[in-house]
Picture 1 (cartoon, helix red, strand yellow):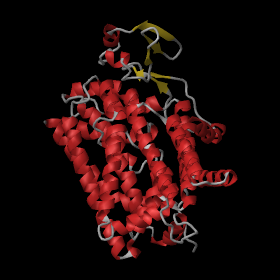
Picture 2 (picture 1 turned 180 degrees about the vertical axis):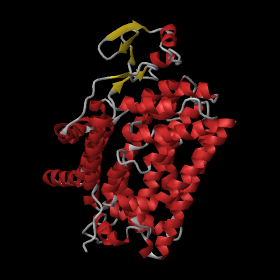
Picture 3 (picture 1 turned 90 degrees about the vertical axis):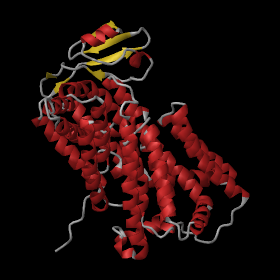
Picture 4 (picture 1 turned 45 degrees about the vertical axis):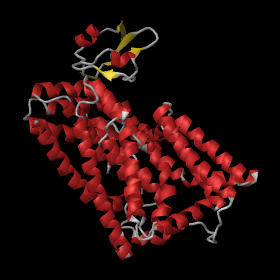
Length: 497
């Protein structure tokens, strides 16, 4: 009997898109009214189903709409997206999505995700250029020798640094750039590709899950809940340290098993394929010339400039993409690559990540179907009803589970915050717990499900390394269960403190 092969990432997402299309025929259509701040004339736009009303931007109007958020959160730009208005949910005429909408959804998703797709393609081109110089291989060989016998330091260093980026500024989509760079380093250290994937992806996931000063989750969610972002900060810092420690122990133990016996690797059957993917055909020793050192310096500076720009200069995808494009051109000049060779190499490098770019677009297409089918707000409305008048401990755990489920349909952290917090945070008042419990539930629920959420970044990340989703699930599931249990215990205890 022929062994059934697990479907590819693209197929998984298309299946999910098909199931969501069917949901639009089952789940009632509905929508909340939204409130958007207009900086130009200092007014609010109350956007309803049939009309848009302009009202004065005052605290009294916010109170009238049952929105317990200080006015300055809107005027100073902390809340820059339209928020849902509580108690305004209204069922609408069904908008079931058909076969034609299903077929168009990947195309619409690719168009909507064009910013991150171009970032991925340009990064692929940059990596193709730096690899063609031979500098990267030489650097990896040096690092592998320097860490010989102390390879676990690599796991701790990479995971902790990526988590630091996640907790401070939401380091997530940007991690796509690091897989082609760091996987060869882990392979040179006698680990398998799964260790590298885990360090980068889990580091980012735990960092964003336990965000401390992340403006795209903690701060915007706290603002939307009407509380200071410092409320509950100590608890989130404890969770960051605890969850990161658990993950590091898990990854290091797995890595040691693989080093001692490579057959214990979950991706052992792909060992040669992955090694060939990240090893240059020309394996001769490359000496570090001044040009190669400068090339590596420019390459490293691209990431430093990107991180600084995002944190300090409010950069986003356009600026990040431009940074990598300029970096590739500079390396081309430094390494004296011929113009025609540069174009061919850059295009080939971009082509290597085209599959990843398509996965990102198809995943975005799933959210397009939900938005067009008007079912996202319906799911939010019924989810909020489930948690009313619950016991404190059960409320905290149930809210975490609700946010985990909602994150499948709304994978954007900032989008989730502004859409759900005005609806969910008042529920904490009726139960008798602080609103920071809802903010934490939002972060931990989204963060935990992010480990395995196919509409998030995991499928795109795995595609860079050509590792199947089934193998990732086999690796991460024990850790996933441990962190779920730990998180629910912490949430239950914190609700009584």
